[in-house]
Image 1 (cartoon, one colour):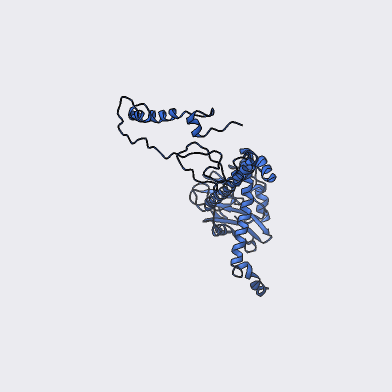
Image 2: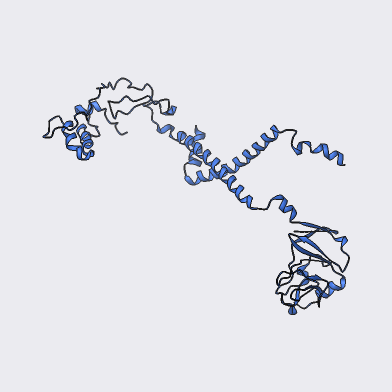
Length: 62
Length: 279
């Protein structure tokens, strides 16, 4: 509970620090959310995307 | 701590000194709020009959008397209840309360910061998602205004320079306009670099118009009214506009005629000796 208390008094108590927390949180959330979404998409489409099959065609060229 | 308001039953009997509002006053304020009906309501709410007969005798409904034993836990097993009224059964809201607040005998101040931290965490998480959504939507709209990849691919032209012999000018189509690429001879380069700036209408040194002096690359649109000039023609051996007789030199600078400005030099770069990429 001391963690929650210190988080509250450090970040949430003032509107200014709360807003900064939201902005910084949004930057990290964006990165995690976008990369997580891409990772899930590639997991679901494993073997169908160009970057998964690219090596098969590059060998024939060389 | 401030003493809690005494239960209603004590107030009525005048036993408690902490009653917030006398019972009769409450009834009076109800009667006063009823506007035109207030005299009739007063007649019913006072024990002593007034001069007016009650219009609606059933306005005051006598509720069930609930006897309050303040020693026993009242109505709710866990959380506390404020005894503002005795004639309504208060439902048990303890399922909806935070576990820190269930005990009415414990101070809520101790847990207030952790409760606030949770509330603000939920608010902040919602705001973070909202900011992300707003940013994504705004970025979508803004990026829809920029050129798409196929348009960007079409906006560049790559020219093999070895195909242009010395002293010749070649015309290409670039972004819907003619593009002149001229392979200048050493004599032409020397002549253009020697031109006095004072005699130019749009003063610009030849060095500022070329990257590699062997190649002069300009947009082939006359700066007068937009005709396409003819290469290797005119008094100065550069370009000549047949529409109104503007003469440009071998650096694409205006020397004679109505055009006000030099031929425009687009952005270009040489990836290697033999290629130029314009755009």
